[in-house]
Image (cartoon, rainbow, N blue to C red; front, side, top):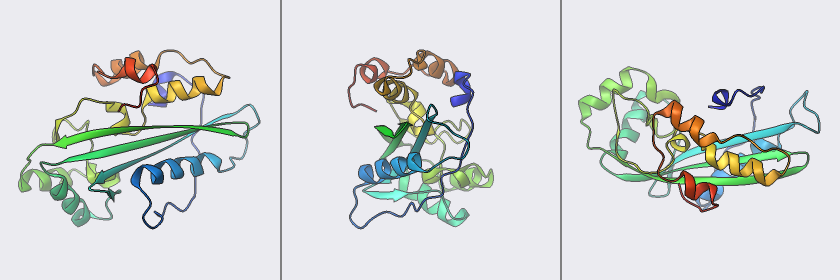
Length: 203
C-alpha cells in the first residue's frame, strides 16, 4: 500500500516479543505492539527519518485470531468466524526523531455463511496462511465478508487515511490526499473518509 504513494522507503523487520499480556484488552495490545515496533532502532536511518509501524489483529469475542499455524488452524478459525461479526483492529505508530504518535482503526466485519467445502477449497489456495484470522477481505473467489462499511484498507493492514492524519499531527510532513489514491486502487468508495479526516474515531 505504501508503494501506491510513490514514496522512497525501505522495509525493516521489527524483532519483538508479540506475546499478549494477561487480561490485556485487544485494542491496548495492538497499540502496544505497533508502538514497540516503531521503537526498534533501524540501522542506516538518521534523525530526519520517519518510521511507520503497524499491527493488525482479528478479534472474535475478545480472542485474538492471529496467523494460522497450519491448515487445521486456518480451518478452525474460519469455522469460528463463519456467519459472525468480529472486529479488526489496525494500530499505526509513526516515529519522528524521539517522538511517537499513534492511531487506531477498529472495524466491525460480518462474515457470510460459507460452507465447509468452500473453506477447504479456500485453504487449498494457500491464501489464508499468512493472514490474521485466516482470511483476506479482498479475496474475490472466496469473498468471505457479507457486510462491511468501514475502512477496507485497514482490514487489509494499513488504514491510509488514519496514517495521513497521524503524519499531519507530526507536523513535519504534509502528505497528499491518501484517500483518493486508496480508493482508486481498491475500487472502493469509502463511506468514512471525511469522518476520519475530521478526527473522528471511526473504522
